[in-house]
Length: 375
Image 1 (tube, helix red, strand yellow):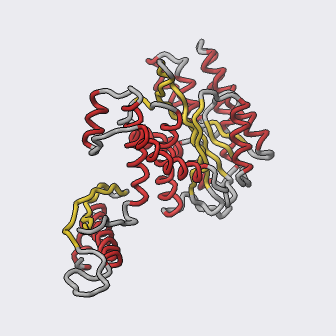
Image 2 (cartoon, helix red, strand yellow; image 1 turned 90 degrees about the horizontal axis):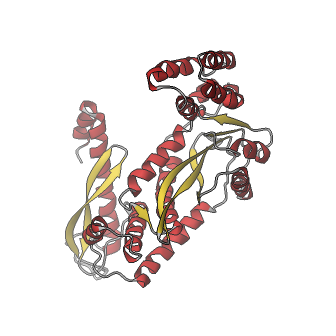
């Protein structure tokens, strides 16, 4: 790599410049790995050699700067192994497993069969699927049950929904993802569950499980308005507050507003959030205008709409919604849509858990989410 050329690329186009830098660096990493595994440099004559080089194979890798094409070294005598793709292999294996398991259980469609064929799977058997699943299940369970080692002042909870086969029926179940901001300002995925029930008893059990694993220091729980979550959060984390996600509140209010007046109400809510008096005034105006249900929605969530204002001003923008974990759920949806209908809960959790492990690694090794020094 020519350092001067890299600098010029970066100055002219930062995103492509970073992509070029990452591509070159990771290619060098794999060359170093190939040297270690072969026991000799390319064309070097030595008795210590374990394998001979056999060219390269292009391999795509998605990064935060876009998709890169890397040159993966190949050996004649043994497979080349690299840590560059190791963490992404989990998701690939989990995706293959979900597709193959669907195929075996009769969920497959023509599209699924084509995908299986493209993945190079010619012979399918329950035994091969079982072997593939066991290692992934062990990794996912270890991740979801690991100790929580740092205090988590801010806790975020959100759900996404998936189709699962239940005998001859297809049912919708929720995957609840729990994430938090640690006291050092970094984000962390804390847990995930597949459920078809979101009552207070469920939430209490989920929160108690997190506490058993070491969750401490919770000051604020941010979520949507599902029944029971507020009471469960207040009971599980004494002294903590519950914050109703403003985006979810807006959606709930608009469900009871005619389309022609929705834009006006959205603007009113944006101006009112952050002031209890303005929210109450808006609710009174909606009630006077005949939108009693919309007014009742604001009043019902009002005690949980102001909690974020008790925290440092630089934190508030990220504490007033569940956007942090909603982005996680959008990524889960994007990367699981190829499966369509999951054959069972285990297959769903296996794939979701594998993706969450990747996201968590990016979070804890990436940029700090919040600066935690108090004002």
